[in-house]
Length: 252
Image (cartoon, rainbow, N blue to C red):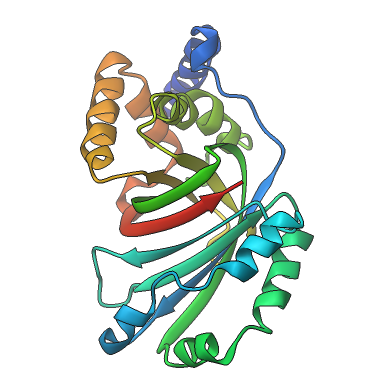
């Protein structure tokens, strides 16, 4: 009982500290941003072909307002059962996501031939209300994904606490400094995995951001000792995993 009490006090204290921080450090909930991610496992012989090619169809869908972003990633740290490549697109609505999917399914034969060579394929539909996006194109960037699972005793508003008081302020600061081009705290819009699973995603314009984000996170944990215990009180760290890939992204 006392352990649970201290966990709740720790969460509340960290949240209050965030709310009393300078305005520039505060992060507020935003309108939903939906992302459709298609993960692929291609044979190594196909890797040179699984790179950004003709993006005219995506660009047209951005121009008519169906989507507001898209990109391609290639895994840089491979695992036996992990993805080798992915492609994604984002929208302000679920309808936009699936209108885009419908258009892509009518794509050209060359692309379909590549996709048919995949040995595995799966999709995720994500929803974020805490994010920052810099309009423009990221070329030769890096994608970093941290996957976590909420504890059963995590508060019902755990994602809000993480977005406003734990993850959001740090990532927003990195965004304002230009170290991060885009970041998002994602829950599953369609729960194809454990419903308690959530992800923190950020895109870096270049490799130097990998060291800068790590240094900033270390500094944040040292400056505010409550961040670590607050985060750990809500997630299973033993279930955490990370993914890193090279990234090409276009944001409106």
